[in-house]
Image (tube, rainbow, N blue to C red; front, side, top):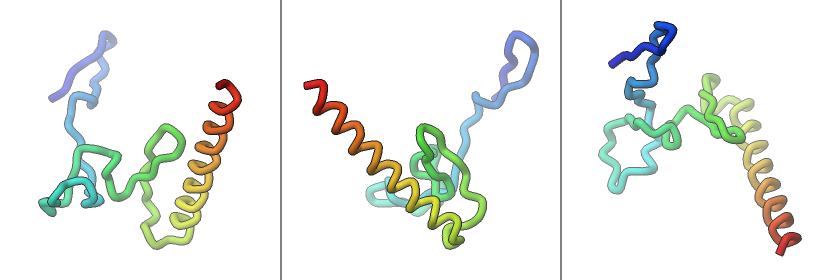
Length: 89
């Protein structure tokens, strides 16, 4: 399904997109291998408030470093949030 905006440009947001599944959501997982939810996509990483495709592979040292850095960032963000909330109470 396609639609056009007022300038006549074709847009794809009306299409359903499927990603390679991380097989962690379904209970029990049907092992179909795909999901329409980017939050459960195997090759996508959440960075801040956006998802980025991991095109270099799960075992690549750059991917591992990115995941470690993102874990540290998320922990620091939670600590900052907790601190700010404790100060405004």
